[in-house]
Length: 305
Image (cartoon, rainbow, N blue to C red; front, side, top):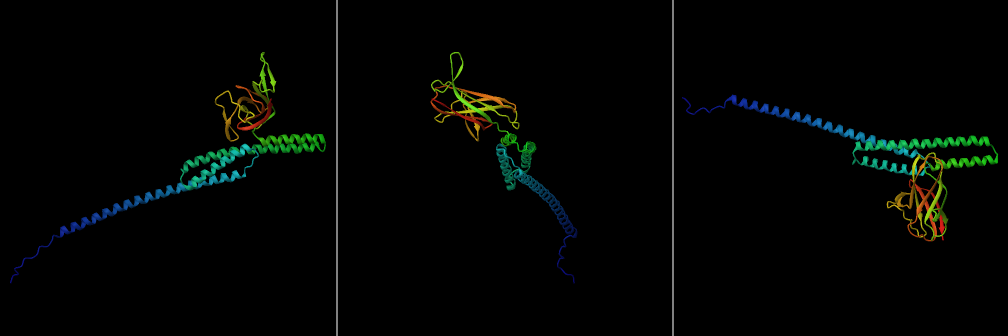
């Protein structure tokens, strides 16, 4: 007997296989894409790590360079106060730069350039100090040789000691100029134009300061600007004829009364500086200080009645 129920329809096998194949292909494509992205990310991480490693290495190199400079600074020694002050200032710059590099908030390549500049300046100081030391050693050798030749002759021994003291003073003061035999006094002008010394304030029309700018073989030859501060009995600085009358001396800014340029060639030279009064002067003691390159080179006083 035939079964009257209909046979259920079967899904085509070809369609099922096609969907499965498409799914497999999509899965493979996605895996390939993920793999490519993974390699790209890996390359980026490797590149970033290499950059970090390079920056870290450069930071360590700059830090080592600065540390070596500080060690070398500690070995430098000089009796020249001006040079010592400049070296201390430069050493502070090295410490400041090294702190910035260590904190990591400063461009390493910029720090490298600044460190190289500071090292060049330091090399200049090393050469200068070495030159001064060689001069000092030569002078010491000359003193020993001279002492051996002079023996115990009293007069010659005193001359040698005086020469030795002068030579040592030259090394100590380095490039600082020194004025000797400084004098100052007031002047008035006669009708015939002749300048006459006076100690009376009522007659004083000018102030003259004269001195000898001594020999200094270490100082650079050329134009030197000398600034004179004339301080009145009440403590005020006598005014200059020019409006721009301020300059820096001994680390501060102040007024000068008069200035003069001198052609200095490392040999003694006589200098006179004149200040012209614009109002009557008062009686009492006046002080005169003369500066060059911010350093006091001479001092004197005079009085008016």
